[in-house]
Length: 205
Image 1 (cartoon, rainbow, N blue to C red):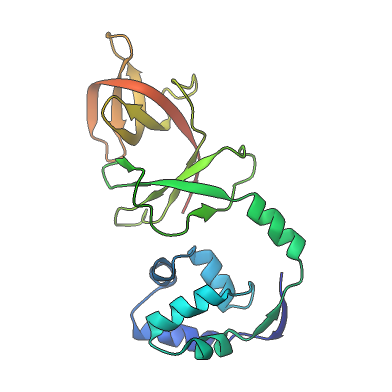
Image 2: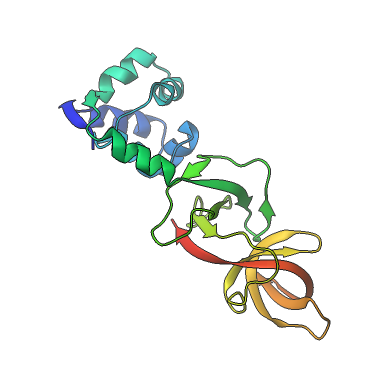
């Protein structure tokens, strides 16, 4: 935790956000950081970075100096803990659309996210890019070759012959290597040639 010498002017930030009709999620998406990180910065629980201040200044239409002034004065209290947190960060490797399709290119938002407890360091995340309550949610999974024995009946990242999608393996088809699947939007495919299926280990709003 940083040591607060002069607290941020939280009301100033909230007023500027209100002028632009932005909530924390929308504002964080424009800045390019996790909304929880932005919330903590504005409330004096996390030190801001110069690059973030410059982006916020551009969004608000003010000078970087004004943003820095309203961020207050925070001094780092536990740099070692922050280094440990950075070491635990996991990559966001793709985006999920509202039908469950996974795109590996064009990842938006923060590219590194916190690793949940009890997941392995090789775990990666997908970010939901669709609209609605799930917008921005993260789906964590451990990439695997082949079909994980625990995948059947669970939400998985499924690599089929022609695409990768988020869905469920309902059951094995009569054709070897083919499975009945349902996508994230509940669309059902009776026979899909599945190369690999990795269970989703953690979901973070």
